[in-house]
Length: 459
Ligand SMILES: Cc1cc2nc3c(=O)[nH]c(=O)nc-3n(C[C@H](O)[C@H](O)[C@H](O)COP(=O)(O)OP(=O)(O)OC[C@H]3O[C@@H](n4cnc5c(N)ncnc54)[C@H](O)[C@@H]3O)c2cc1C
Image (cartoon, rainbow, N blue to C red; front, side, top):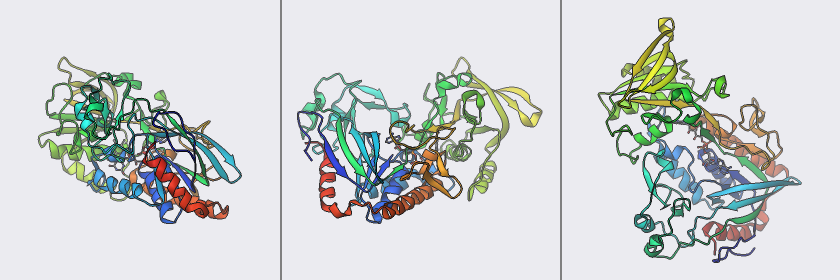
């Protein structure tokens, strides 16, 4: 293996692991920890600059209302500090080839333009940077700098440069106490051999731009449910719940359920499974943050199928949250940017009404996080999520031998179900490794040393 180069040229590395986990959300982390606990060497490849997936950005979780990041952060740390788990963030799998019962994988580490081994996460570069950019982690409601640490409890705590917005003023370089910034850094290709693969690439939320009748993403006070998670988070973009157009605390909020799911017109006929419960959760949390607020949830059906979910729903009704069985046909806005929803109310024989709110939240459909076609030989199903070989008896098994699936990569699901499936995927992967006698354990020390060099940074 050759070490990286400070001149930034592409360097070939070759590493050997028992398992590759693609995706470092809660499902991927759980699978990796469970395999690591069994003594298998695991590599997590996460495309974002931090692990944690969607869960690390959520406020609280249904139905217990526990703090999401308080549960997720220790899991992230457990994976990051696990002696058998190596994590490549800001990296992607480019190609996979089957070699007998094992796989040869090409991984690309994207350049952060910050030397990982030298960055101490002090954020002095971030404070020095004069550029403000919409912050993706805050649902574009807050701002970040052109050089930034992804978020407060990101793992790893490393800065990265957003070259698209950087003006190359050099202020970050002057502020950096360890001289870690390197604008010449190049993508790095790493050849990896693994015995098994777990796909845990999760979901992405449908873009509101696809829903033209709901404003197509143009109405300032029509938010996505993930944006509301950030508004409700203790360290969210505004520090409290305010509507984006004028910073007013909303006194009336409407939820539009099944926005872009169970809807053939946008090509998503399936149920996104988590929207009923997270809308109820958010409504409860909003009632706590804004004691005078009126909240209406426009729904087709409430699917409260999990343990404790029905009681959660009943509690929300008892708190005064209004549930209206209705289909929202259109959302417009008045001259003060108050969203106006046009609804067909089922309980009133389909009467059409217009109702005005200060803010409207779209419970948007969940789409597959990644299409592995051409990169990993796993099949996708009609809905675009990874196909299970046997959804009844072996849901974590894909149609490709040695490749398993965990969490929302196989279809929308909540955190407890993702965790359970991640455990099942880890167990299936361990059985596969045992059956094929493929383990990197014989070369354990060499693997650890190589992995440590690569994970800690380019030379
Ligand atoms: C608004 C909202 C609120 C919610 N609230 C709750 C709640 O209160 N309780 C609850 O139980 N559930 C809730 N959920 C559901 C919860 O978000 C999911 O159950 C959970 O995030 C699934 O975890 P995952 O790891 O499978 O997927 P994700 O969290 O989507 O993680 C997938 C990871 O894979 C990475 N990835 C994707 N493609 C690639 C690739 N090609 N290469 C490398 N990495 C890749 C992603 O960057 C991401 O880090 C909510 C969902 C939404 C939308």
